[in-house]
Amino acid sequence: MANTPQAKKRARQNEKNRKHNTSLRSMTRTYMKKVQVQIEAGNYEEAQAAFKAAQPIMDSMVNKGIFAKNKVARQKSRMSAKIKALKSA
Image (tube, rainbow, N blue to C red; front, side, top):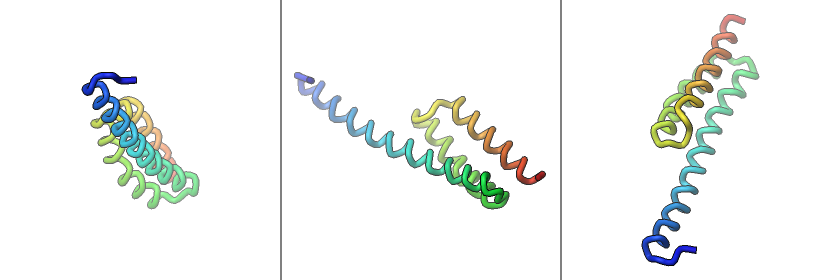
């Protein structure tokens, strides 16, 4: 347990930031799931719209340090490829 006032404050800040980051991570995953649901349903237009809504949110989470840059890039690439496959199918 923290003993000094500075350490106590850091502990409070860390807990507050952890909860905030968890909320942001959950929100981003929800947007990603919305895209996945539309892809699985085979709805090209809805999948494209959901992807366009999810993309800036995913990018902002990278800037905030919630997700790693390469992980988000990989996920966006895979989603984009699946959406393009829907159009051709």
